[in-house]
Amino acid sequence: MLRKRGFVYELVKNRLMFLMLLPALIFFLINSYIPMVGIYYAFTRFDFNTNLFNSEFIGFENFKFLWRSGILKRLTLNTLGYNLAFIVLSNVFAIALAVLVSELKLKWFKKLTQSVLFLPYFISFVILSVIVYNLFNYENGFLNTTLKALHMESVDVYNTPWVWVPLIVIFYLWKNLGYSMIIYLAAITGISEEYYEAAKIDGANIFGRIWHITIPMLKTTFIVLLLFALGSIMKGQFDLFYQLVGNNGVLYNATDILDTYVYRSLKVTFDMGMATSAGLYQSAFGFVLVMTVNYIIRKINDDYALF
Image (cartoon, rainbow, N blue to C red; front, side):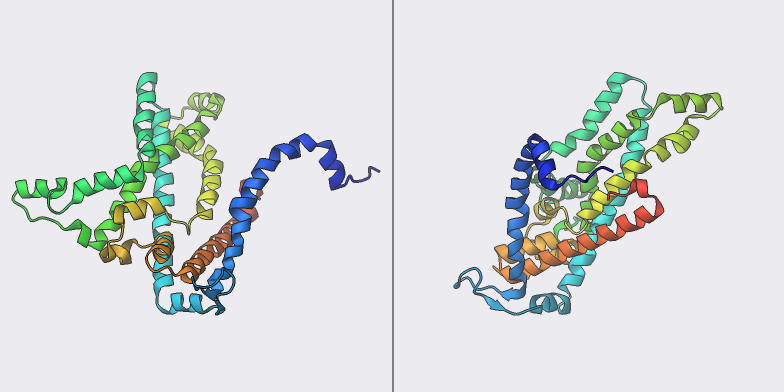
């Protein structure tokens, strides 16, 4: 019977491997674990006139204020709603685009299509905000200039909250769809041609091959991407929301998410305790959600679970 080796033995035996892990461990220690000490501020009324750990301890008062004021409920619904739309629509459209591109026969046209779809991913959110402003500016934006030329009434987009719900989703898809498509396209490339040849022999047309071979083969990729996306479902696309909406208070009810609220609490009101409590709630909610979804998936099919 073999005796189990201890951690020290493994450390000495695989010292080069552990040495290669050291930079990553130091990175996460400095950027992820040490900052977790700041969770303490969520339970305090932070005072800039004292040192970091001498503020008044108030327990769950910050969380109670966020809940009773309705801020937490609104932020949660907005963050979850937008992210669910991002996850569902981006995956559905990315799979559809990946399937369509994979069926293209002309190599040069296929590469051109991939490049055109992938290009918006490299455009910064600052540039995107400039594009959006020039499209919807009330005075001389493209939309209102066109409406005026057609002798129609101008639309004040920046003072119409509900309009921004579909607009934010559309611009998110425009910017990120190409990146998601490339992932699914890589998965499709890895599917053996033997499956398609066998399907052709059995008389399956192109739609039959896509439905019975390509789509099922993408299931694993979809579930892994879904779990990764759910891990950050409470962390909205801060750059997207902040650059498009900025500090326009008229749009907060429809566009404000947890990330923008935390940033604004620190930048405008300097409320460290409120910002930290919102951030802690955000992280805890996301952790519970990922663990729950992963548990359900593991019960259904253990091969698809992350852990």
